[in-house]
Every structure is written in structure tokens, then in C-alpha cells.
Image 1 (cartoon, rainbow, N blue to C red):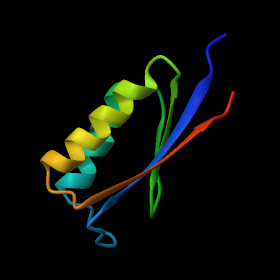
Image 2 (image 1 turned 180 degrees about the vertical axis):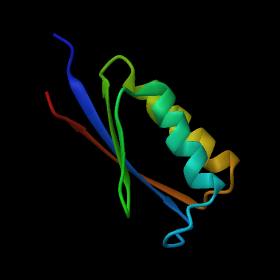
Image 3 (image 1 turned 90 degrees about the vertical axis):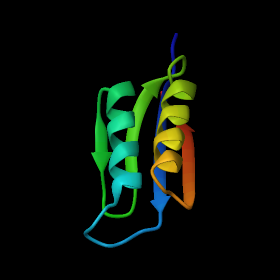
Image 4 (image 1 turned 180 degrees about the horizontal axis):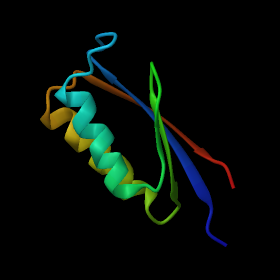
Length: 80
């Protein structure tokens, strides 16, 4: 049985109400790898199957860094 993995990421620099390209590019990368992406005020959450989570995380971090992120924080949790 394939597990579902929840990935939460926060990208800095953080400017309230004005996410930069480093944030929006990472969100779009997550959307390309995940069925559902929930963008919150301080972080973004998405879910992927265990076989797809490494590609999802790599795409998010790569997009953020290529677009000027100074820090990417990740929280990964197996939820089911």
C-alpha cells in the first residue's frame, strides 16, 4: 500500500502580502507534482504519494533557490 506524505514548506525572504518569485515559482512547482496545494499565510502544504515525494521536494527547493530564496524550511509527515 502506498503511503500519503504531507509536505509543508516555508520560503524566505518573507514579505507579508507580497510573495516574491521565489515563493510563487515554488508553489507552481508543487502544483505540477501534487493534486492539491494549500497556500497559507506562513507556509504551503501539499500531499504526494511516497513514490513522488522526493521529486516534489526537489522541484520545490530548486524553483525557490533558482528564484532568489535565502532559506527553505520543510516539514515532511507520513499521514496515511
